[in-house]
Length: 488
Image (tube, rainbow, N blue to C red; front, side):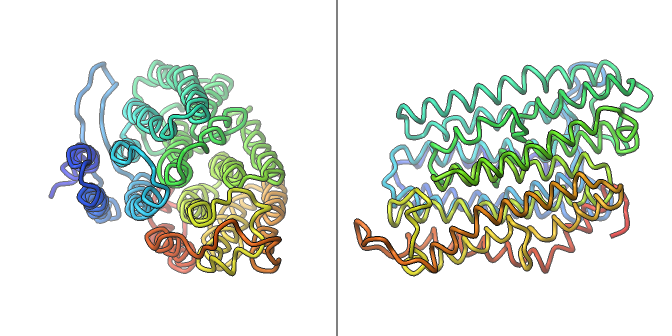
């Protein structure tokens, strides 16, 4: 199979899966078999890109060129390969979990849920393989539009309000800032292609480049850099598998992936180092990390706390990308993976707790570790990864980000990392303590144990991946090192 065919299949296979899901929706077992088969097939296809990318042959495809220098084209490089592999792998796990959750909660409209989920994954594959800003923008918007029905799945007043905020923020930022930034880039550079070393050097002045970079950062609303973050807590009205999609598999990762690609392949690290206002965006990312952690500390709802934790963790990636140090750029890429494994585990656990016990608040979790030991053990692993404690994935990415800060002697980054680590511990560790070392205040409304086995199997697997990535992160680091050709 040629690399060009693989790129086409990455985008088309989930769309075919969505169509088949819709056609067999009246038979739930068949519908879910189609979902799992499509997810496994997509991951198998994505793995076929490892060899050409690692060996330098690459994979590229041009579909059309509607204007000079403005193409709809695909080109898989190391960062895109990791994103594609991550999203396709976690689609399998999330599908298993979603089957248990949707059946356990007796959710209506399950067929549209699984169909739109597949379309969203197709959008994520398009973002991952985009060869330029125009192509990325098209699939970025596909991802927004296809996830809106998932956010509003419950179709009640809260879901509709959350959906309005979700669409309002994401479309306003992308059309109001991101699209003009792409057009500006095309006007000054004559192309929007992702190019090693960037395309703006010699084509735009430092002050204008600072404005352009600001438009890219604020226009990529999916990265949830403050003040463009309100959509993320609002979207927590969605079922938990959707929260996992938003926070770990596709949506937020598309945001930070976009910013990282823009920094490396549109601006270039050497050019950005001479941009006078670039550091202010780094300060904005640092503020987002600390401020979101403080807000998370005050939350009483489990999912709301995790939402603000995600806002903070996403800005780790933005901050690392803007440090402009080789190790920090690797840290940004590695944290995309580390955060995905850890945060999807935490959301899986929150959903399992809700399905098994109907509990949604942190203060309701006294003693629940003894009723749901698998779930809360997995939650502990995910929490330790968010804090950055070995042997979890979060430690690896924080190591590289901190190493990058030392490379450029950025004591601001070191201070932010220290403060956020302390805050993460302050809102995660009390939950673990309450679950395992505090007795129940009263007997639960209904006696319960663990959630349905597909949910427990999924969260146990992602918790295991969170630990395994601590030990076996070498392949990802090796691939991402090729972005900048830095020593491992």
